[in-house]
Amino acid sequence: MKNFVLAAAAALLLSTAAQAKDFNIPSEKPVASITMPDKWSANETDSGLEGTSEDSAVYFAVDIADAANMDKTIQEAAKFLEDQGIKIDEKTQKNKQDKLNGRDIFFVSYAATDKDGPASVGLAILLLDEKTALVLSYWGTAGEEDKHMPEINKILDSIKPAK
Image 1 (tube, one colour):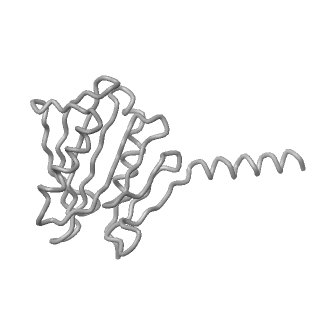
Image 2: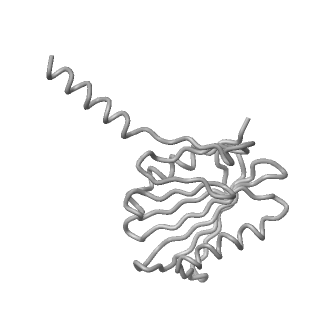
Image 3: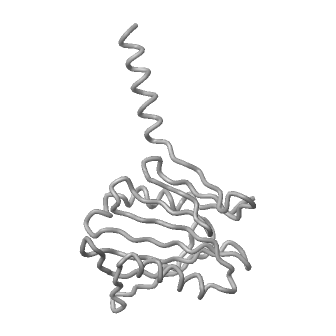
């Protein structure tokens, strides 16, 4: 019986560790939902949600933007990264247009440096409808971020417009 109780407790702990946190963006009158890994620290911001991997190798944020006023939101995201001491190498810019969960998404990525050395930076615009978009900001430590790619892909796949 003792072994059964220990096995059941271990199974519960393992299933809890694999769980994730669901967030509405914003929490009042949501326009979208997103799921963050349970081991990541995540908190709401004035305009969305931000999260950091357990080892602080990856930062990921989602901000709501007015589709007609995207320039301002992108400038704010770039300023935030700059304020964090991230220097983007604009010569490394790569652009990509794709679909994410059936919606148009536009990616821009760069090589960069931060206080820890080489890093990667990405900004993306996900159009929810003709009026609303999400701006996704990503910053990761080169070499360390690769182990978080499965989590990052799950985060991206979890983004859904509110119903």
